[in-house]
Length: 252
Image (cartoon, rainbow, N blue to C red; front, side, top):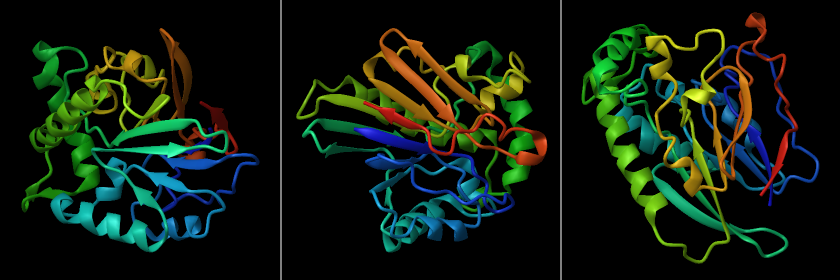
């Protein structure tokens, strides 16, 4: 199956028009497409199916317990398939069956180990202020994000532990990154990086391909036999879009 991958378009502020990649059979949107949700309209009537995993900024200034169902309804109205803590098996034109395992996979702040968790969570306060979201009416702070992360992390771990079923290959799609190897080289080994990457390294070999966003840089590396790819666009004014490949197609 040939997959087009886009993420971190930030169309609430960026001027960019996504277009279908030639030969792609499926479009993957790995989050932070538009915090206003308005630009999701661009993917209505896309020539191939569209799978969407929400990014953190899809929840900006919203109550996340209500935003999830509302965003799913918005996507359904546009013909976009939103996945959150769900897996889906699709067949390509050659009848290969691909399992897509998808979740936002919020950060649990354990990237540098439990001993550094408190420091990482203090650093996260800056990002939480930018989002201005709530959870059960209270500000979405680092502790609340960690609670969300533990839920989707447990689901992801369990799903990837399942014995092989009626699928040939597994593609994991998360917004947050699964490894420090995806850290932005501009910041690297800093507490704030734990707001972007999780230490899910042991899970990576259980997939054939792992796609993510969130980091405003591009990555393409291999862990064992598993390819990990990030094709974030980011903010053009910061030069983050320079390496973005709008028509990147990955074959699985």
